[in-house]
Length: 359
Image (tube, rainbow, N blue to C red):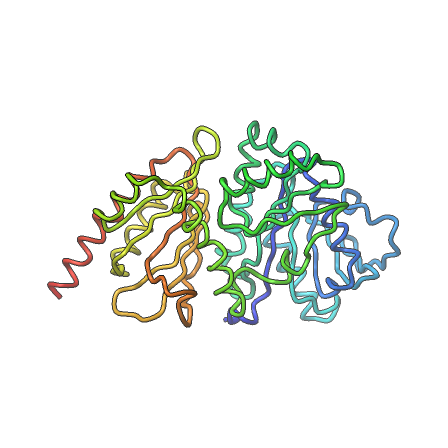
């Protein structure tokens, strides 16, 4: 099996119709910084590479001047990635070291993640890289209010790109940025004008590679600190009386981001059973979960993350990002009750701690 360090990262570029996804992708394809990248798209024409001099490598594949390999997807994604990787190993195409998959404007990214994580062939050679979602800087608020597909795309992302800032009113783009942080407080928010943005953070710095893990965890843990500063005194008294607290933000009537903070170490087996049962029953309503967990009997934390029914393999950090060693779990929910999730976790932890004490 390929190790995590050598597996090909598959990055997903998503975004609602008209959100500037194609403009952003066109910029990436023209950049020499991405010469070692393979891009899977729906149609060449949509990306607008006709003005570039290209070398045909096959019926569905072209080599761009930047060195990027660009392929159209025919059939399912797993077959397209496997075929591209096979041609890479046989020397038919240059040896790319990352893949970017562009989704359609109405796509739910979760099935693409499932393909990479669960396909019996791909999971031995590939891993999920960054999930990037574009949001229209002019019409983004209306899109999020009217289209649940756009909300899902934003909720599962590691990187959010507000596009069309050359056309947007500064006040409007600021409102969109604030809305995105409420909807997905763990994602880095970037800005793009004419498709130009921080491409290194966008794709080059993968959210979960070994060098970036601690910084990435620190970025999204700031969510708990930020909303904790705005709690009123009654909430603080409640936190002192309970071993776990819930801090939340809302986006619309039924989308909620919240953080459960646990002061006591977690019994790992009980936590694993609880998380498995929770996602099995409510996975469609849990758009995203990220957490740093203080495991009973260990000195360093474990990072967990999932999208709907999918759970990534736990990541063991070498050390805590800061002196705060509390467990923190950030959820983005669609129509679930935060307090009910908190209470169920506490019940499982009580059972796990009792079993550990008896053992």
